[in-house]
Image (cartoon, rainbow, N blue to C red; front, side, top):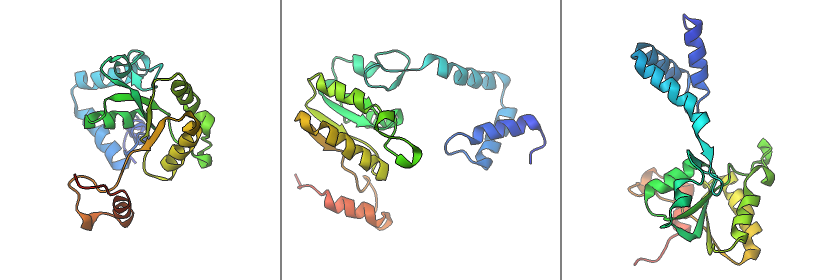
Length: 199
């Protein structure tokens, strides 16, 4: 137990953030106590303004300060491909790779009956509408390689099958620079199953 209720409240609030446990939250709280007041004020303002200034893009549902977002407004983007992701963080990760120049669609999660998340809780109807408007030749399912991500990818693919567009799934397996001896058997198996021809 910490000595002061204000510190305890801050630690409790920080612990609610993903990936932050008791030790990290305590360390952050004491860091903020020792920081200059201007730095703490700047952080507090940034957090406060975040919810006021960020909106969902009306087309792709990414987080943005202006709708449509920069990607949806970019005329240089390939409008014939649509990459479907679970969350805005997934979109950001793909963008950082610099390998994809098409458009996106953020579902807002994955199917998870245990958590009460069905198709109507995701932006699947909006995706079907976008595909139905024409111009899209390929939908790339870029959901995470886990049970929920795979189930969501299969469900969406089944829903879009009748459109006749190309439906693909991102490949996954061994990371670039990874050592086989440190990889788990499932990852190695998937890498073997999804091998490709040498060029």
